[in-house]
Image (cartoon, rainbow, N blue to C red; front, top):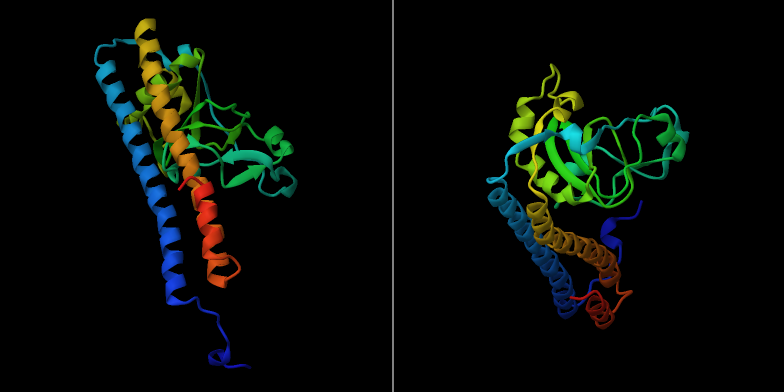
Length: 260
């Protein structure tokens, strides 16, 4: 068996190593700046809601202004139900998010899997909230998504209520937890949730709120989407640069194209 010490390994020169570090560092810096931007504008949206909702009275129940649904899991014993082209979310997908925008999931199911479980396919724009174990992780799905049974999905009858209800739910997570029960783990039932009252503003207030808040979330979502592209670029460049297959000059051109 050959001695590992006899292996020949190509190592970039110190100058090349420094240039590689600068390139990858520029990508990391841009990712960090985008993450900070997203966090700031999301907080601005939450602060705006907190100031606006103080003047809004309690009104209808959740079930009166939105469709309230849950999800389900196809049989794991049937491989034909899995690994298709349908996103299928679990609470783990939600808790891993940097911002409240679900663009993909760790697992997918086949059309037969969707037909065989109790989840519908939620079109983009549903408010998704985890309802068991970790209660109150929230996101809006940006892609058609099915859910497992650890969710409550809220689809407002009036699309203008989407961001209002998102922030309403976000502000009441502690209350939702207080309504949960369970011996093994806490779970908020859809029955309890849908009967809870909601603060809904007058139409003029709602329109003004949505006109302020939707652009903030668009900016945050765009910044985080750019981060995914930047991270993919960084991860693709690193082995190419370290192996010498890609020259530093060519890598610099690629990151300029990426907007860094």
